[in-house]
Image 1 (cartoon, one colour):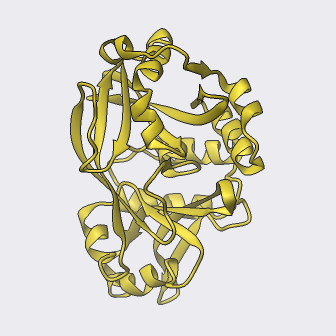
Image 2 (cartoon, one colour; image 1 turned 90 degrees about the vertical axis):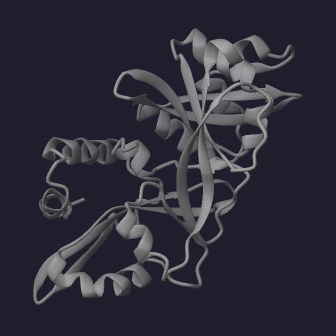
Length: 274
């Protein structure tokens, strides 16, 4: 965290249209609720000819079953040092490790660079659902639990801490209770076209459970003032309700599961990027 002022100087150079207050807000969130892998560095500088010429931010988190995730974000290298970009990418993502690396909002140049450090697409579309429409499909016998009850129902200590942390970060934490088991959900608030409030799902161990009980989730969100719900799905996912499908790609390397969504402790939360 002590290096963050130097990082902001480079970020201001690499992202001149982004106000410094944007990075300051991210810093404040990191200080208030650090990632649960706080011993990991928050990124890497690239030094060339005695000067810092580039950086990438890295947000690390640990989820259930000991899974380590590292989200790479806000990549910038000065043109004078871009010959070293591939070396930096390989240093960031070693071939043999137990960490799942993610690129959630990579620009085209970064996607081209990471072809040499192979990432695979983990989602192909963003599904946007109008909650008033899907709420009519709510099933009997399914309950949505609030944050406290969901945290209490989760047994894994890392997941429990993550749910508590993201509640403190302003996310909506809830859970689907079906047949005595609880599937936790974490939504972040965002806006589409700068106007439409959307609850975007950033964590669930089971996308299938979200699809199956979308009506109940939609009703829960609608009651709390959310007209839209958004979540990621595979390109060939068949959805039994009306929705809008938007093109989006997230990329991962390492042991990243496709059965759920796990963007906890990521740039989506700390920086609020779209």
